[in-house]
Length: 280
Image (cartoon, one colour):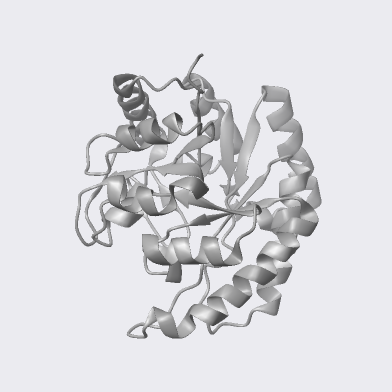
């Protein structure tokens, strides 16, 4: 029996702002999947209908598939107004269906500095359930990322959210660097707590320790190759989405530039080859 293959994708706005520049670099790397977040100086959720039509036509013409919509849903304070944010989720779900992708990436809300996250658990769960109900109606899966400094930045709280909401329309994005930056070993410590929920990996590496330096796969402490091999052994066939953040790492997006993105892609391929993980 042939081992399952993973596919390499990437947040193309880390390459450049212009769509043609993004796609040209991906083509040069033999990558034909991408995560839609930003293009033409706008978040994909803010693009006009004409721009969305242009984007869809270009992707189709050049043979690209969309892995996920890289939405900012859940990246607000837990005490911020919620209903307008759910209108934004409605838009993200519509865009996901328009681009024939199963996933919308989401987060689990910033907690006020100094507060005990446990004090906000019920509100995080309430908001997450509302979002999941919308996703179920749209037949889209919410991919919950372990972003640092939000409620679900630890593997324990991530697992609690996933198991308590208990929906096939809520699954996990596994980001090794984000765990490293809060002082958690992603492999095996974090992975063991969420492994059965992981359907996408965001690929950036980092040094272990609070706010460690971001690095390409294999050059930090993320043990990305071993992580993917362990997932592969469980039948994982999801996306490894490059999000290198090699030049800039902001709260809304990161940037690597063409050369940085290319270096990150080649590092990832080398790590996968070393572990014997088939990829495409």
